[in-house]
Length: 267
Image (cartoon, rainbow, N blue to C red; front, side, top):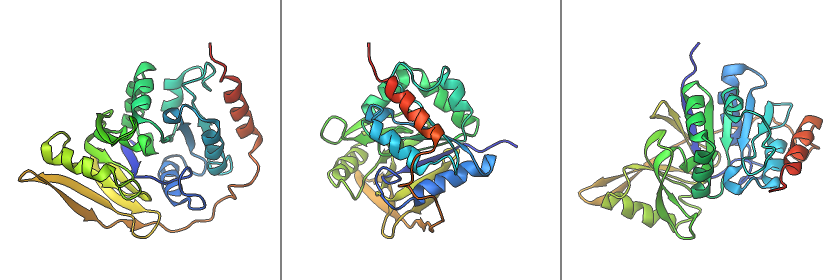
């Protein structure tokens, strides 16, 4: 059976932003499990954070070996975690891209040829998701704070249009995004609150979900030279039973983390 192309773009949230609230992560894991079953393969790309160790540890705590087959790829390290990154990504059910600097993320992905590999994975039915930089990267245009102040930048262009994340959490982004839409510097797109996520099947929005009440997404477009926001009421996700994120890491998870740390020596 052919798997659909799916991307989930969080405004902000997931294990790195919502301590004690796993709803968005449970949601994307459920999409991945629909393809494989109980233990989907999940790969984390912490590239936008410079492969920060604490970020990788938190990933393994929330995507534990009891729920999936977790792995990560560290592109800033000589021992990146696999001999063939492209093949590894194509074997996954879910690729989860972390937050950080979207400008750095784009540069590293393109330098390693992973812009092409990720598109191949998406076309093959691997679910792609991410928050912040890991959300912005999928669109043609995005509003980033990678340079210190909000500015418009280019993304991978898997999804048409534009994206602005942390819509409620970092309000300084919003006027920049609205001005860019009004002036034609960015095409119509989506403003997404922390705690909200957009599910795209193919390149069409399939649904909006939220991990907390009052999280919203907005369709933003220009009308007569002015930006117009249309609020979208999301589906509020429900809690599921899940492992204790404070429990010790499994042996295989610890081995993966130690391998990443050994590879951190640069030369």
